[in-house]
Length: 427
Image 1: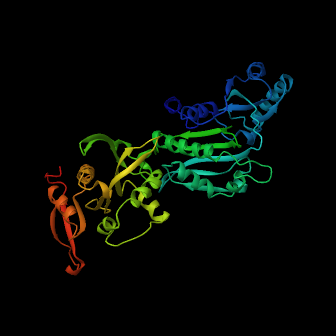
Image 2 (image 1 turned 90 degrees about the vertical axis):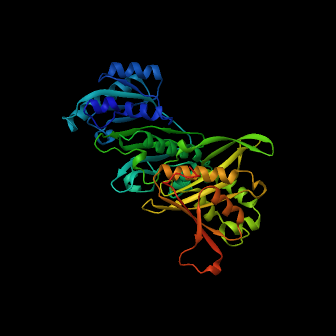
Image 3 (image 1 turned 135 degrees about the vertical axis):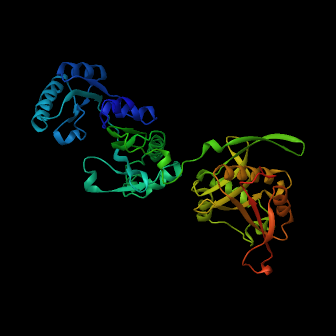
């Protein structure tokens, strides 16, 4: 991309675009670049094996099919030579201004029961980078079957975006058509999201078609436009990417045994283990945390607790490894910050069988450090008078305790408040 910008270009050639996608882990068709010569094209096709696909290569032509610059399923050397000659003549007739560098030659990909999809990205003036998914092919504008999503994407969010399109029903299989490998498509969307986060120079991206069947997905064609004047990247995402820099390990000593814990921001994928964590809480502990009793928690609320906007809210969880590849949540602290980044309100809870283990203190310390670093001025919490353990924890961390303004004393609530920008016990 640096070389393209240094060359004064914005559009990557198809081979450059495929190299970029391949470096990001996306499945692409191997492509060879040759000069504007039928002899060179034939040598490449002979090496790849027939049938092949030949496309015109020009910095000035992004939509090659519009000028007859794509030919599929070429089955022999003689046919290939005739195609190259005719393609050059047609392109020179329709686009005499275009400088033709040569051809690209790639194997003809045949996937049984395949669907043509499109994956794209653009930079919106309001929302920043936006990812598109839908039905692809040459009739993409006519079908207009697409869904938009804001990065960053993970697998659940990518699958949800796919399900918002009409073609999603076809991908699920019908009659003698097997279900497509939707997980492979979701992984493409996640990889594009990561690419947009890491490379702010990407202004536009278009994978069309993305071919998928029950076995795999592969990008047959790609178009990428870059710009040094309109950078995007993670800093311009409408939703902040997962803050992996806030993940840390902690050697926790409990009941004479030292074990490693992970303290990290919560993720959407944590929903199942977060449900398991909440189900292990005693009813009394839940009432002390949310001020009322409850017997169950709905998926919609779990989604709200695990799918957060890290720029406006933070939730840290303490987890430990369990048998297999899983982990379990032992405690969580959450804080929502007002739009002016002046005051944040917190809530903290640890598993009922682990109270008094130091987890609450450690979680609160991590949240206080995070909010101090982002410049938040004040941290407050509402605590029931009977929740003596929480009030004592707040005192040890330097919180001041007082009545809740404008609330009747009958509500039995106390307000704890900490000035974050004044060094104290919670530093």
